[in-house]
Amino acid sequence: MEIFDYEGGICKPAQELGVFLVPAVNGCSHNKCTFCCFYKHQTFGMIPLNEIEGELIRAKNHGAVVKRAMLVGGDPLALPVKDLLDINDLIRGYFPECGTITMEASIQNLRR
Ligand code: SF4
Image (cartoon, rainbow, N blue to C red; front, side):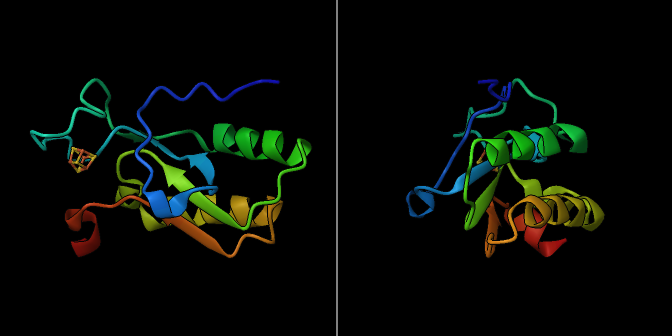
């Protein structure tokens, strides 16, 4: 089985136990919190859509049922809305049963 070569750290809240993880971004758009060493070595950027789709296809081919997905990376909400909608469309295209997509976000993301 091919495994997605995700190079970043994954910080997943306990309430997301069992959620399907979708690699969406490398790094964190802020990356300046002194207490956080998750993404210091990375430059923030979206993972190419074709690679995200490849991961969804891999999961689909292995019979995954995805009712809840979480975008992985420092703060995927920093992505432009169009990119988030493209990822949303891919997830819902392969997993129409998916009712919820979550992600980490900073307060700057929310303000923007
Ligand atoms: S915003 Fe979050 S992921 Fe980014 S550096 Fe701060 S704690 Fe780490």
